Amino acid sequence: MVSARLCVAALVSLWFGSGTFAFSEHGTIEKGLAQAQHECVTYLNLPKHRLYQYLVHNYSNDGKTKLMIRCVGLLLNWWNSDGVLNTHVIEQFFLPDAGDSTYSERTARCIENKAPEGDALCSRAYETFQCYLQQYGELLNCPKVVPLSDERLAESMHFCLDVLSMPLSYFENCTSSSELFLSTDQSRCLLRCFVIRAGLYSDKHGPFADRFKLQFGPLKSDVFDNDLEGDFCVIRLRREGYDECSLAARSLYACYYFADTLLPTFERILPLLKLVMSSTYEEQETESSKLRFGMK
Image (cartoon, rainbow, N blue to C red; front, side, top):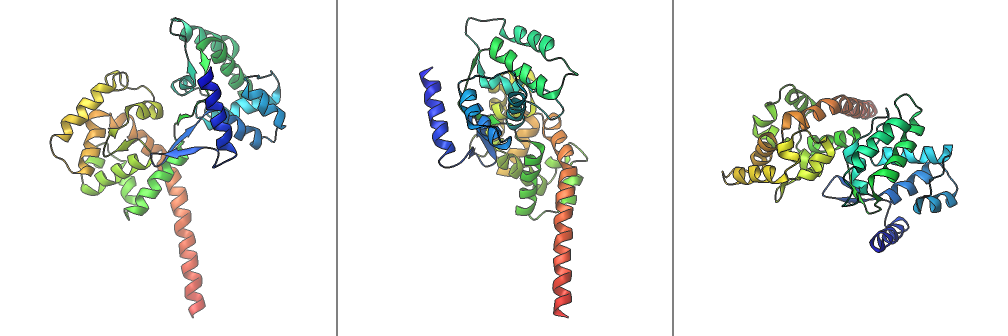
């Protein structure tokens, strides 16, 4: 309890000091429930006394609180805009009792009964959160890594394409087959840049297993439920003496199921990149045309 209070105090200091959330490991975002509540109260223009109520976990059953809870879920990516709950994300904000062996089943039953599909999104978000509060465990206030949205993932790839001077068409071609990101020096370095920028990988550590699980969900038990398997796989590849780009790409392919994690992500963000990068290109062409016209 003392540590929780200290954590809240530190967060309050952070809000009124350097900013509302912390960036670490390049594009990784760390944010806590209290931070998210503060932001959502601001976005929704709720009275300040509401924030003080929420900080002591007083969540009244009213429309404004339901809006706030859904906003928090969207910010922390445990709740999708279409009402899908990411259980592996919300669970990191709660600490189950060590002697409780049925908390997960109780929470699932509670959600099924109190937040059925078809209910209004805000009500479902609120009742789902209440089920975790009542059944899952102690609510934690300390910041946790937040999964990156598709927009932020697209931003990371956009950055890497710019830094490496690669056209969007090259990335689009690579997404057409699961093996193409492994096939050339350029594609391997683009993949390495992206996972570093997204906070999923470092040259020193290799892939971050916990962040992969958080970002993509528990897809493969031999990797995500046993981090040592992935670590041993990467260590074996390190001993083979690959360059940094090749080591990163081979680690993601051989140890972290690229085709099930990163490739579907790339396919999803491609339309976003086309929209953003084509708009940027058109703006640049317009400016160039204006300059040429002016020179004449």
